[in-house]
Image 1 (cartoon, rainbow, N blue to C red):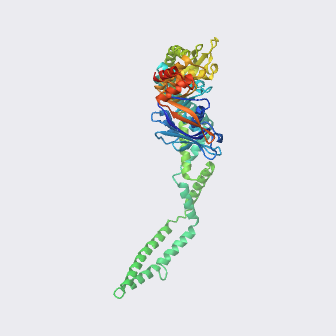
Image 2 (cartoon, rainbow, N blue to C red):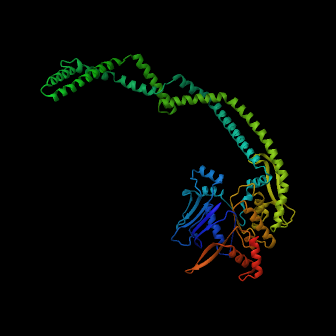
Length: 552
């Protein structure tokens, strides 16, 4: 529901703030007062493109901000999650147009693209302008409205869930078929690669460890000489370092009674003595680990060369990646071995799912056929009331070649607007005002069953008056009992039905024209509607008539 609309620096609107009722809001005003400008501002909220020509003050940016109550709007909140946007209550949609014409859009203070804005606001507002009833070009609307009055929306929803599973099964089958064909092309080569890696059987980090070991062996003489010399200097030279350190430590400790600090140095040298003994032992141990076995060296070199060849062959860098390739090939070969059985199982699952869909689709079709005739009659009755006495509306239901998201039917709304004897698609047969009244009639009949966003009707009563206008007002009022409606009208019969009446007017200040809007009290409504009936100086009869329209 649209709670509030704020417009600043747009066309001839300096700054206005409008609060709306949750039911039927009627908007009236003289021609050129700015009613369509307000719709233009709302269109910006819906994602329409704009430029700097809409700025009344070229030194300031244009701002249009709408506050919506979206707590019960599951579709909108679901899209917020999809686009990773914050959910807030109310949800605030804002458009800003800079003096250079650059436009920005925000949803709950997060910038969004116009495409995302358009997708989100489609869940919030349904705008019906003259010659702009795009819902009648959308087959989904035809299915949904017929199913709503048929009272089997839960059955259709269950069918749609099963249909999605059916499509997923088909997709899985097609993907597996494509994979199997690819496997068959590469089967021998993949098996060869797998066997090669299986035979090599490299252990974790083996190639890297081999490289390190070979580097050590290639410097055996240097390593052995260094270790041997280190051990010799520490333990076996004419004056072994270890023994000299030991002797010096004892001498320093002998000074304990004369200088305790010197004895402490001796203790520290004792620690060095013990550490150097360990170093010498480790030098001897490492010296003994050096293996100069030519056969072993050759074996290590060959295995290292094999690892490097395989890494280069597959464009890999380490043993881990080679082992992952080995596992991937093993999985692919296993999947290929089971692909035939998996395809057979998917075929069975698809056939079973299709059989279930056939039953559901037949039931849905039967209900639609039963309800379509009466629905058409009800639409015709409403169209005759709202100024289309010659109209004949019918719903055409044909079998579809295959399943679709709504069953196995093709639904088309047809109209003969002037008793021509020829039914054509409704969007091609009706004028702009007639299309709006057709939409009003359809949505009135589906109001209880369908969740609908805020509905905006721009001069739905164009070209009618009298009783037809009164009936349009009645339909709008009844529709407003279930949904929020905004209706721009010139007809007193329609204006009198509003739960809230907004009046658009012009003021002049500093030789500039500005649009203003105000919410009318009951007395103001009666006076205004009386002028719509009888002119600027309405008679007592016009005032009585206006009072009757407002108080009904």
